[in-house]
Amino acid sequence: MHTVKKSSLLILASASPRRKELLSQTGMEFAIICSQLDEESVQADSPENLACALASAKAGEVAALYPENWILAADTLVVKGNRILGKPGSAPEAASMLRLLSGCTHQVITGVCLMNRIREKTISYAVTTDVLFKQLSDREISWYTADSEPYDKAGGYAIQGLAAHFIRSIKGSYTNVVGLPICEVMETLAQEGIRPAYPNDQNGDPLP
Ligand SMILES: Cc1cn([C@H]2C[C@H](O)[C@@H](COP(=O)(O)OP(=O)(O)OP(=O)(O)O)O2)c(=O)[nH]c1=O
Image: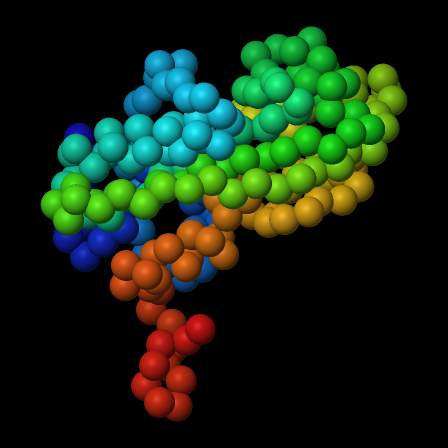
């Protein structure tokens, strides 16, 4: 059983090292409790609703254990046309995902959920980023799938890693592709009065 310090108001319900790093960069203090959600058990009528439903289910699991804390959870989906690409389980699967993304634009959708059980509050939304891949050669695909990078990432690539070689442009939030849309998340947290301990400005108001 994990213990959460009382002073740790916010809990990030995620095992993703990328989400931990992104939220840490903001200066926010938080604890981490991972959800054990079986993602296959969640269904929805659109990728945006699925991303939100998955984020809400992850937050809900942890909120049941820590009803007084604010719980932040997210789920990132890679969507190409009518296909949702999960994490590849093998090199051939990763290669076939990359062939599908090669030379085209796809969407990365991250569902975000902020939940507090005691306050009966749930805020959930999805943020979408368009990502354009250059045309990939078989050699580039073999090179990339020989690395460990694709295998714990939705869509089989990491924009923040070696796959930066492949990405011509993006439209929208970069941090959303990495797993947590920081600008939107910080606005949502601030709406609930949850802020990092920033220094004050001349009027005594916290920055930014
Ligand atoms: C597209 C893309 C995804 N990803 C990662 C972000 C997420 O960690 C992962 C998508 O899987 P998720 O199921 O969203 O998250 P997770 O299983 O890693 O962690 P948890 O459910 O505990 O929060 O893919 C990148 O790191 N870079 C990228 O460019």
